Length: 119
Image (cartoon, rainbow, N blue to C red):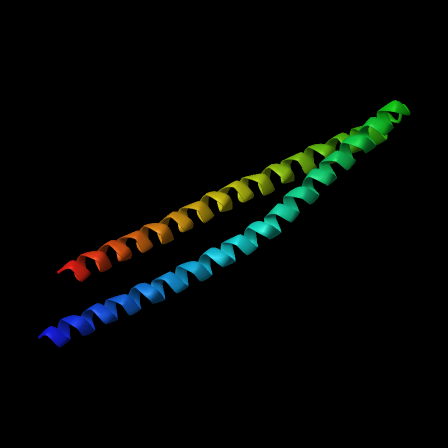
């Protein structure tokens, strides 16, 4: 019976290790997605800035038809930027949640290992 208990603990440890590996891989994937979104967000900011500058230039030169079109494009760029920013914030929250889950699981495993060592 004692050996069954030990093998159960070893199996439990293997399961925890596998869960940790899967969680870590998932966290890595989320970080990679975050990096892509960060670059996309930066590019979206640049596009909004460029659109704003083109609009200001058209207004300065009195080209109202072009300014009208550029104003519409600026609004579209701002809207897309907002979507990218929302996705980035959502993913950042998810990364923090995943990180907390991993830490919680590690702390639980360490606590259980400490208790089984005492018993």
